[in-house]
Length: 164
Image (cartoon, rainbow, N blue to C red; front, top):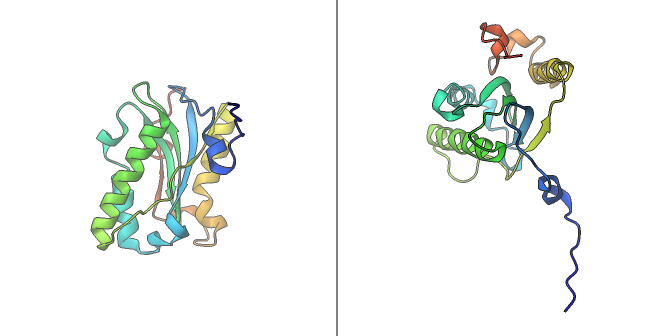
């Protein structure tokens, strides 16, 4: 019997070769199921945002910068040594989904399966990625300037500087 291995297509192909490097910084994006604008509701976005500050969620990884948009989330994550990026993102999505569903009395999946990630290669990439993240609400026309949007943060704002 001859077995043919067809190359993976679509999202499955993105997972081939995914490698988690401790200490590397990743730009991570995931979206709500059906691109529902769940976080248009301020009180629901607040609940989801508060989850991000739970230190136990991150173990030895660090969240450097993030923004919660009405139908997706972007973050810069410095991966620690104790787990893979997939495990960390799965825990993050699960915890946010549990808290959000509890707050809105919803059931079912909050997020689509999987996530998109991009490993940053240099400090220039880090600056560009952080700007991309925090300017998301401005580009989407939600606010005129970043400071007017409540659902974002960056370690550089509070003096928790990135280890260089």
